[in-house]
Image 1 (cartoon, one colour):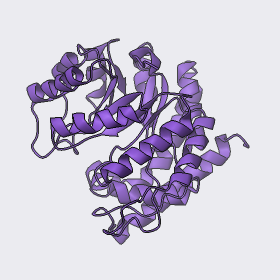
Image 2: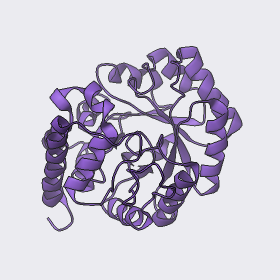
Image 3: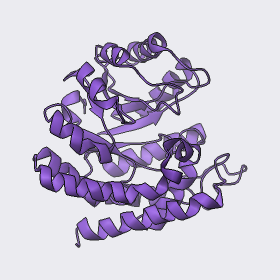
Image 4: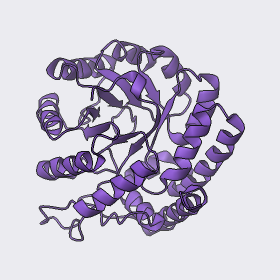
Length: 322
């Protein structure tokens, strides 16, 4: 399937990478829990998540062996069975390695790529645009979703850079971190590129730009896909009263996972916090995190577990058996 800007509508769900019991040890060589991966994909697709993305930060793209990465994406693709688009996450420390590994992900059936930029050194706007231009030249016709995370990638993509990225035909969307820059970035790209706000920030920007803000991203779908999909349906139907109510519940569910309410403190331990919240939510068994991201301060654990419990309560409220 050839995925375009117009196909990115609804919930773009980012999945974790379920791990085997030995995954936290340096000696482990095959840490993908394939049966749990299959279960996860079936659950979130049955709930109505519209697009799947893999191997961002909490999907542990940075701590998988290459063969594990390919095995996981292959399993997601095969279980999904072309029911909706799958964008495989790929971020490495240089352009050539990203392209080399991206081609292998496409060979196992990914419909497109979810691509972060190298972060050993920061890239300025010209470097960011050149990076994605190079990917588009190497992978013509392959749809790309940009990964815009200022903390992880040492800088924010500016509206001017977004405008340039929107002129690259292969670049069809961007996972946006949100905040005060969101409306300006959305306006900069217009209807040439889908800017994806976090699910908890989607409603207000959709009310302001209903013809442009037609999709969001969420990392909570393996905790509770049903309330996120319910919010999406309300927003796309422009039922703003219902959308606002569900959005308030999504914000309530996510709040405990941010230590002290700070995104920067969360980002330092987002993988470990993710594993704890997925486990507490009870929808899947995430297994342990992979090295070196295995340690979590005691002060962060309670919030991660409470986040998962809150998601579980919303899944009970909005799920198929509710």
